[in-house]
Each structure stands twice: as structure tokens, then as C-alpha cells.
Image (cartoon, rainbow, N blue to C red):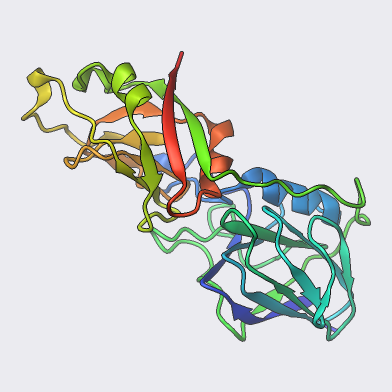
Length: 288
């Protein structure tokens, strides 16, 4: 029997992701990796893997897989129905599959992205040291499609940790910390503007960036008609295009940009943004 999972259905979008390929910005390559890294790390711990093992990031559920041999799978992220051969199995807990069993992940009750880890990890070929799919450049494996066969590595230890972990409940509004700079001087009273603004998540958001609809940020008079030379940007950068509506760069962002960055969202706040559905209310809270 082959240690593999066969993809039967993918839902709107399912991707192989690990913790990414940081350190390649000089090559024009973004870090990529799971947008909700803590959820993937938890799934791997519960499945008995290293936290860095590759799993599947799925948007709005609909993922269905068939096991080629005995294995353990764990689904994390927001609470979502998990079915094995049509019967409820539960999320955030190790679930054993026999050869031929089918596991299905339904739509999360709140939030956006679920994560599935399998014992041994998904061992598709690595690119620049990572198995992550980068949707901007196309680096890494293609988005999953029915019929794909995903090889699994050899388990190194049994499922461990707690038998079950309570799933988080992503809120319908977020207060997001923002460290001002490097181009906050391009804006008129940037801290006050950010603190007073109110936005919702746009349906046009994706792994490249979270687009916000709402308050327009205005430039300082001295920079009203200035153009910015393209410069490096980092994950979490809050870029403000000509529309004045902020975009928060996520893991597949371009490594340079030509619009001013008013601030940066710290890394530990990005997982919440990864679970923000379109229409989620967002406040940007200047800190530091």
C-alpha cells in the first residue's frame, strides 16, 4: 500500500503549505507558507510531525481526500465539520484513517482557512527549501486538483500532545496593531488617521494581500503629488495605494512596492487576518 492521499475534491482553493521559504527576498521570492502558521503548527504537533511539515491549507472547506494506507490526519483552524466515510469525526483531534477511507472537511463555522496535517507530512518536491505554493510567482506545487496524489513521509513518532484542543472562534471584528513607518511621514497625522479609520475586508483579498474597504488615508500636502521609487516591503506591510485604502501584505506579497507603507502589522497578529472573511470589520491600532 502506498503512503499517500488522493485528492477527490478541493473546495474553492486548497494548497500545499509549510512554514514557508523566508530569506529569499533578494531573489524576488516572498516567504509564502501557511497564512495561519499557528494552526498548521498545531495540526502537525497533534499528528506527530515536526511543526515545519507540509500540510494542506483549504479555503472555505470542501476538501475531500482518500487514504492510500493507514495514517492519522488532524484538521485545525476555525471549527469545521470533519467527516470520515460520511460520519462525523471532529476537528482539532487526531483521526485515524485506514486504507480506502475518505476524509472530508466542511466549511468552517467562522473564519476562512482550515489546515489538514497527515502523519509523516506531505512530501511533494521542495523548491528553495519549502513545499509551499506561492500563488503570486507560481513557485512550488500547483494548487490541488482532483486526482492529485500526495505522497506522505514516514512517521517518526505517534500522534502526541493533547487528545483534543478547543477550536478558536474567529471574531467578526478585529483590532489590528500597526507599528508606524517607514513612510508614515507621507501621511497627514498618520497615527490619528489610523486610529479614527474603520474598514471591512474586501472580497478581492487573497494570499498576496488583505484589501480594506472604508476610510481613505490622506497624504501630507508635501507628498500629495510625489511618486515613490520602488523599495523593499515585508510581510505585514500596510501599503497605501493612490485610492487611499490600505492593503496589508500577506505571505505571498511582492518583495518590492512603489506605494508608501504607513506601518507594519507585527507577525503575531497576522494569523487573525488570515482568518478574516470578506466583510469582517477591521480597526488599525497604532502602537509603539
